[in-house]
Length: 292
Image (cartoon, rainbow, N blue to C red; front, side, top):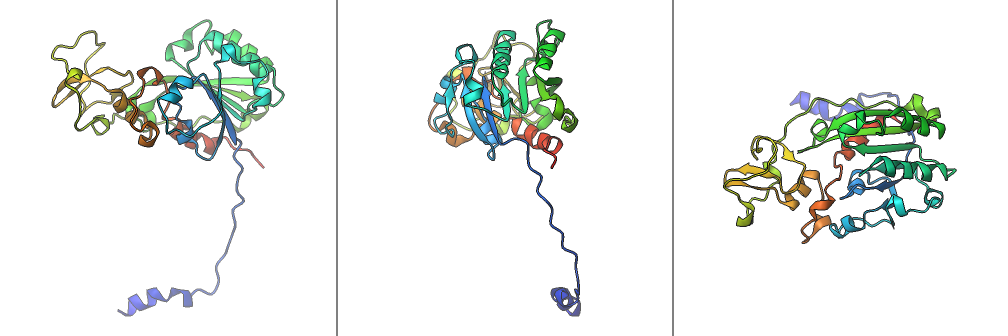
């Protein structure tokens, strides 16, 4: 009991202690804009940043009535050339890309004085070897003329805590004067997380079940053993039988908040979102800060 009493009164034994304040380091990004992200989950991933716009996402936002609102702009092929001058952003995140669409965004970046401090692009992995892809010499040279250096990584959602098995080629365009402050975060190896916790426990319609499914590439994943496929309507195996993956189940696997969807059944065409951006960003922000 004596030892306990002494432990409770340690403040009487402390004569002096050193007190230091840590100067907050200012994050380089405050605002961002997105394009082609389908079910755009950046508002969930980056709550401390301000989303200035979302381009080409009108249909996707209809599937998420509970999502925080932001100004909606048309797709890049219908976006006026001076759009980034009137809606400047620190961070530009682009998905659903093609060489033509990337060229369109390059033209918008050319026509603004306040250029983004970082541009992140998400491509299907096969584009890394294409002659017209984002890492092609001609493409990299065009961005270099605008003051951007280019680097890339191929990443899977399973490397950053995700349930959905989806790989992306992530391309970063970094201003040349900020390149010394850039470093890719360390990403571990892929970890399989079973999809069972993201599936409906009840209420699955009988029409979803198939005794002899057809047109499935590769083995059919099992809910208790395998990660979730990235395509809505894919066949999965459960203890109740083989059936198709429902849209709301994939939405849960991607991390869409339940309050966003409400009573709506999300449209399968909007599932090109990158949920693991949240973890990617938290790692990235430790490596890329504004030095003061």
